[in-house]
Amino acid sequence: MKRSIRKILIANRGEIAVRVIRACRDMGLTSVAVYSEADCTAYHVRLADEAYLIGEALSSESYLVHDKIIDVAKKSGADAIHPGYGFLAENATFAQRCADEGIIFIGPSPKTIAMLGDKIQARRAAIEANLPVVPGAEIDAANVHKALETAADVRFPILIKATAGGGGKGMRMVEKAEEFEEAVKRASSEALSAFGDGRVFIEHFLQRPRHIEIQILCDHHGNCIHLGERECSIQRRHQKLIEESPSPFVTEKLRQEMGEAAIKIARSTGYVGAGTVEFMVDQEGHYYFLEVNTRLQVEHPVTEMVTGFDLVREQVRIAEGDVLGYDQSDIRFSGHAIECRICAEDPEQGFVPSSGVLKNYRIPSGPGVRVDSGVVIFSEVPVYYDPLIAKLIVWGKDRDEAILRTRRALDEYRVSGLKTTLGFHQAVMDNATFRQGKLSTSFLAEEYPDNRFIQLDDTVRETAAIALALDKFLRARKIAVSNNSSSRRGDSNWKQFHRRKNLRNFGGSR
Image (tube, rainbow, N blue to C red; front, side, top):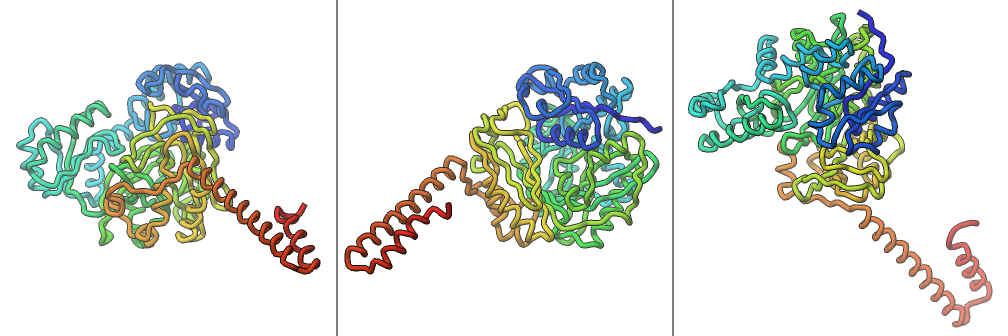
């Protein structure tokens, strides 16, 4: 059934809230922001058409409170809620609450979110759809002895994974049987704390795999297509840092196979909306189903750059009940795109979060450069939320051009007042292994085992610029003194005239 959307509440903050607000503007829709006390001066609050305070700084008192979000939606007259990513984006209970209140949830149905959000159920769905999966099994964390027997059958090394949630929480790699019991307890405890669900399962740990995902779009009318792959192998603690599309590893044949597999599980689960089917791919090119993310991904812009699609616009169109209006044969890929997540973290200290006020903030521009930013100069980056402050997305006609352009854009980026991952990204763009496309989820551990990255903050940059300017001045002064000395040694009046003329023009034409 066709439903018209005129006003959208964005149940999120930071760069993704800004991204959705911009899509609303492009579509002629009214945007509604919500914010905590810590975000009262945030950029997304200033940019939205309307903004409402929903609670204290802690997300458990604001962005995660269903009643507060629904109350604002009703008060503002919003037709729909866009959850962004994180927070309530994959919360089936919240999606059902929206449906019960007559508010459009821009995402899959509550039933689909619940099924695919549970990794064990998603794994079962993949097996039923004949997708290849990594050898693994369900375990009872309370019965460690039985779980250990199961782990021995799966074979070490073992990856323990939380059934709910994501972002690397509740995940542990275990190499030996004697480490298994403690790892299961820790993973289960972390999962319970993060997601309210302590269930875990195990899989055989693949050595040096690639993390490759497929973007899908499915409407209410049975149409489903994919928009190619994204390579997301550069990670730390199972969290992505750099993404690109297309993958330097994936062939046209593998792209077609993985795309068809993604569509197969989408159809078998009744998926509607934008989503991502994630795979692990070994060095021989064998792929294995990992999970389905029932939301917009952080890295969606690289797909937009190589396909020309606006994925937020497509989400809204699908939520309104529109037909996709295109099929797989209509999808074209152009060039190569790279995304660098600019986070308020200190890479040389193990990526510990950093917070503070942005005393200087200047983003790069030029051909093929896009910045999705949730901050501006003098923005405060609080300690309460994810440290992602912006995403640098760069397009080139091929991977080599995209890397060079990304390196140039990183050099132009200026941030001071806190530590960021800019230096880390510069180091990776200069890395020979990265440039050759030889990637795996072990990249960071293998290439930078001691977290040594060159990072120049703006204080160092400014000092260097002053030193360079002073050096130029002293060199010019030395030339002037030398010229004067030469004239006293009997140079012709003609030479002296031209030297004086050159010195007057040293600073350039007037």
